[in-house]
Amino acid sequence: MKIEPGDLAFMPQSDETRLRTLGDEIFERLRADIISSRLAPGKKLRFHDLRDTYGVGVSPLREALSRLAENRLVVATSQRGFHVSEVSVENIADVSMVRRHVDGLALRLSIQSGDDSWEGELLSARHKLALLERAGSDVAEDLWERRHREFHYTLIAACRSPCLLHLHGILNDQFDRYRRLSAKTAQKSGPRALMHKQILEATLARNADKAVKLLENHISEATKWIVAGLREQPGSGQGSIRSGKKSKTKARA
Image (cartoon, rainbow, N blue to C red; front, side, top):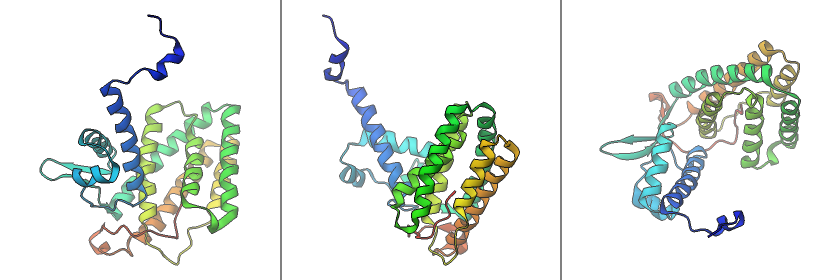
């Protein structure tokens, strides 16, 4: 029997394929709920609760939670199952330090290897983010996060290192989660638009040293505002911030 390419879409999936696809979907849903703080730090992830919430069985949930544990968004313990990772000032300082090194190296390599097409994509990503920056507080949070993350990813997209890009994704998940958890403060989060503009200009000028320094400073500045916000959270005297309270004033980097 000859199978035409168009027939493949109608072929029944194997149980293994369906399970893998469902596991990917649940992974992304859980990941988004953890990063957005809908699942708060320290929250126990019981299978019977998750089955009701996400409408899937134990196998795809276990696969998704194991992957999230590898990315340090979830903690797995042999006796107590899974829970959302706790947060602390010490941990965000560590994440920030590693992110500066990873993104700085990736940006340097991207500047060395990036072509005209990469420059065009970078200009486009910056323009879309600038439109939101000019719009101010009227912008939906999810839209801002998506465009902001796209700009930072495009900066390093030409680095030709899948390993660095993978680490960038994991570290940005951690950083984004902390930013959203950071307590509401009266402090301003700094001239983000100017920082982004300066990083873009140095990158397009192929001035790697300047671009990397600006990016590192940008991440460090955002970390300061995150730490200031976290210290206003209940329990911050012990360094562990358990509240899922969200912030309207965010340090974006």
